[in-house]
Length: 78
Image 1 (cartoon, rainbow, N blue to C red):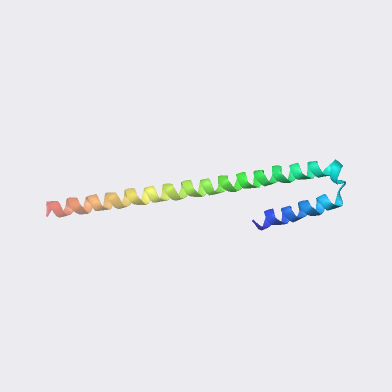
Image 2: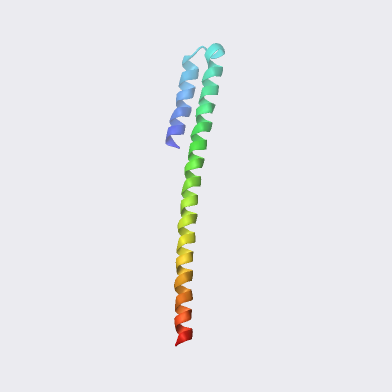
């Protein structure tokens, strides 16, 4: 978020320093292209984290289910 904010401020500085009619559109398009790439990269990172958390949770649930099944089976035998 900090990086995006800094890049947004840099866009304004670049726009003010440029020949707006000639360079402004290129600067604006470049800024948004980079912003969308950053947001896409972050979304991918969160997706991977979510997938790993889901995998870990499923593994723990499976292990706990096996332990419970064994415990119930032992109690039935006794």
